[in-house]
Length: 369
Image (cartoon, rainbow, N blue to C red):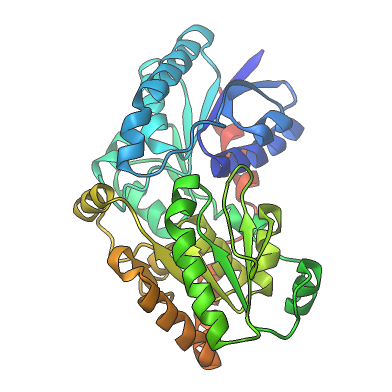
């Protein structure tokens, strides 16, 4: 019996891992999948050892408090590696947890493929060498990342970004607004304060205050917020709440997004919707990140482009006056929105071709003993 261990620790990793597994189930029906993941991996055919529903943490301080429960999970997954000796281990993102598993599997001489490897190009470059020593192959989702890992000595393959297959909308702007039940002519601003309760608690009051001031400046403006499952919030009546499953429809409908730093910024870029990135961290987390992270930009569109194509308002700059002024300037000057849309089109071109999950599945089959 061919056993494969698949480990993802967050909803995005669960999604990307599930797509790879779907390909492998069709190509190699003899494989039995085990692992840590979410509902999507389970639906794709993985027997879950752990579910990730309580795994999401953000920032250094939250990570520290979660160390004991992650240590227990990692110890039990190492036990699985030792006792079951799977034919392949597929690690998906979640670097603080998965790198330890990669090192342990390597000590057991078990093949490891790391899909969406640690962002060592942003901080702790030594991690790239550790990944190179501990893996059979690295499946990279950014072209500059692939070059970085190759220089570190890893067997690296640029597979393209999985969001190229996912971040799409079937709608035109008008049909998206019709589906959402909003005015097809009013200026539309999408609000995405994050997918974690802590992010929403921090950013939603700011975004709500900005929205209130914008609707006074633009009386026909409308605001819509896709809400992630399990997130609790109180929003004023002038903000329309929809399911997070409609996030891409919201992005298509919007003239402008106010959006938390993270994967959603890349999704908005691929949809082609202009945005302003707004983010705040705890004082300690921000202080540490400024000393550890070696990047000029925080937003993925800007990191990929290599220059600022999207405004970033972080920490003290993420205040009511600054965010309102920046949003008002964009909404008052359509040429700014048009110019940003044109620059965002460069992002899709830089990320290669769609079909990342299929290429990762091919890589797994190549390295299976």
